[in-house]
Amino acid sequence: MTTLDQTRRAVRGYHEARFRGDVAAAATHLGEPFHFRSPFISSDDRTGHLATLPGFVSIVTGVDLISELYGEAEATLVYDVHTATPVGTQRTAEHFRLEDGKITSIALLFDASPWQAMRPHIEP
Image 1 (cartoon, helix red, strand yellow):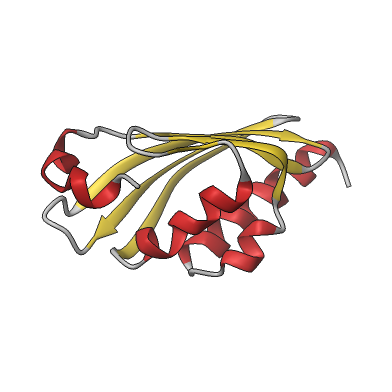
Image 2 (cartoon, rainbow, N blue to C red):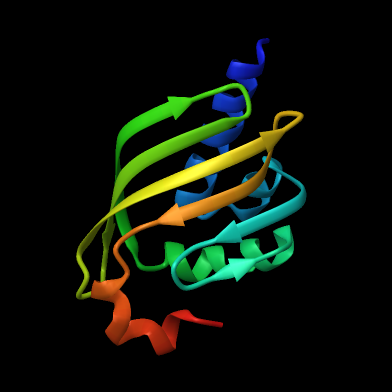
């Protein structure tokens, strides 16, 4: 298996596990150290990041993958997240960095302005 295949397998495995709410399966694709950044939440460890997934998945009603770009040690996914919130559908980009076939950082990028009214319920 090539490094590119490992990258694809780890990123898609994480993405699919996360959106079906399988925290344990998502965790198998994360390395150490691990860092996560989004407009609302930051975490510098796997445990903190994984703890936020059930709450997020509880408002998701669907995901449409638009684009997948893979490199040897990085990947970018672009997708629409359909939510059961006043926000509705959110266009999202997610950039991953990997080491030894495991995800070590995720940067989640989206327009946070529609979420401002819900900010007190999102931030830990």
